Amino acid sequence: MRAATWRGTKAVHVEDVPEPRILNSRDAIVRVTSTAICGSDLHLYNGFIPSMKRGDVLGHEFMGEVVALGSGVKNLQVGDRVVVPFPIACGNCSQCDRENYSLCENSNPNAWMAEKMWGYSPCGIFGYSHMLGGYAGGQAEYARVPFADVGPLKVPDELSDERVLFLSDIFPTGYMAAEACNIQPGDVVAVWGCGPVGQFAIASAYLLGAERVIAIDRFPYRLQIARERAGAAETINYEEVDVRDALDAITGGRGPDACIDAVGMEGHAPGVAGAYDKVKTTLMLETDRPVALRQAILACRSGGTISVAGVYGGFIDKFPMGAIVNRALTIRSGQTHVHRYMRPLLQRIMKGQIDPSFVITHRMRLDDAPEAYDIFNAKEDDCLKVVLKP
Amino acid sequence: MQCDDYERDGRTARSLALGWFSIALGVAELVAPRQMARLVGLSPSERTTTIVRAFGARQMASGVGLLAQPTEAKWLWSRVGGDAVDLATLGQAARNDTNRTRLSLATAAVLGVTALDVLAARSAQTPLDEFGFSVADEQAVTVKAPLETVEAAWVLWCSSSHTKLKNNYAVRFEPAPGARGTEVHLAGGGSKGAIREELRRFKQVLETGEILMSDGPGLWRPAQPPSDAQEVRKLAEVL
Image (cartoon, rainbow over all chains, first blue to last red; front, top):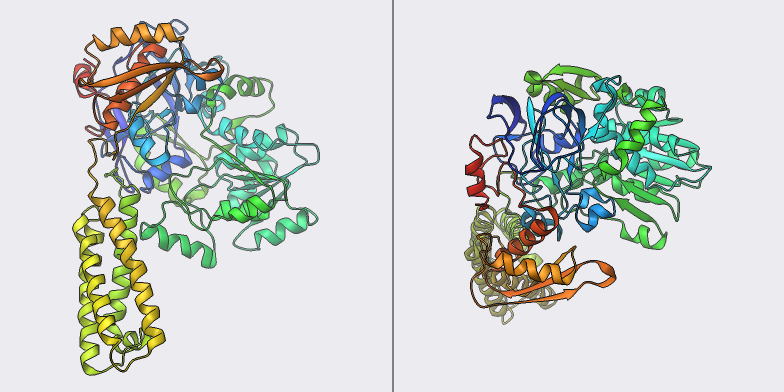
């Protein structure tokens, strides 16, 4: 079958690989009908995530039709149309009991690698390094889904792929980031990063009752989508104005009640702050560039919440801990507990409260994956979200 | 950041930092030996400049070595040796006509760096097991099941083909607080990494019914669907 594989930094190939088989009794094999490139796939593309191996099949946002089932899966049938959540979760452990699916204690066979980096291991993730399980991803014609009796969500035929595909990751991710802000009436929420997750964080903050949402980015087309499609009340281009001053003016000197970092480890900043992290990551003395996170912490109102949806992988420098302690800020984060949000968010889609397909700018064939990664990474051609069809 | 190699723990980061420090200092000593001599309180004579240049070359060698092979303890020990030579030189200079204040400050700085170098070199020499862990104390896991169930399952586990425990281990079971299940404490029987792996698999079989396999077990093969499922079972050691 055809699959997009990681061949090294900035190198994605589409090649023929064996078709997946049932390895465990609770596996399903899904024929992929739609798959997307995630912003976090770009961290792999740019070589920021350790323990990738040449030839790894990429992709953790996918959906399709069940074509084979292990003997242990009783709730699905061959022919079912399903969306697959990106975290792999067993549904049996104490974290799964608490609906902390991305913290599943049994789904990462390479947990020892993650323990060395992070102390304990989170769940396994499709197509996202050997440290997170070494699972083949979904940017392929077929994918093996472990614990298929727990993860995949059956979706109604009348909803197109494009309207439900993003239940696999970015819609729940943006939603969980907004939910973590514990939004109260009158709250102003600022969102750093108007990529797809940022767009869903903006839309979700409104769904959860935010008074106003302010979007921050440097690409005019992304800010425009944030205003016109996600509904942001105001936008800030950080290359044109000072973010802190702009937020201060917009919030009447209070600062945003909650700040969402939808940027993650590859942030950009003009001036010295941006250059500092570039140099340190290049010298391998720092793994991530936390420019958005620092800004969010310093801009947040005292006693407010910083919600981190962007992916960080390792270690950061110049973290303003003093601001967190002295101004009683709360930091919330986590890989998304997708399983927890899929059903309620599917309900919102069916009720017409949101149509997640608004983020799609490019529809391409799986065979065009190398070009698609390139365009998305360079933000060329006003690219916001690529959907690939095998 | 290299993505092919997983190995990037604190040790490597520390070696890299010391490597860049060596290079920075080496370049300064090579390019501006007179200024460097004055900085540490030496009178910049012809002879002193030559010595400082030679020290610069030595720093560059240690620095390049550390950046190229950050896991090799020998480059860290080469820095310790260099520190000793630096200290001896500064001590010798103290007898001559020099700037005493700067000389003592320089000596204090070198002593600080020496301490760092010795610590880094010693930790780089501690042996690691096949999983890259350094110590093998008691390891524990909490399984979501009642104590009697876990004890009975352990007996079965130890007679199954799953176990890789060597003899001479001690196991004990404790109820976890607040109905969190049962704690399994295991001491001995293998390296730290091996014991943790054993406990994790035991928990997995009890909680999910089987040992989960990924498509690219460990780091041995790319994460692709296997052409032969049996081969993956063998690689994952689940046969």
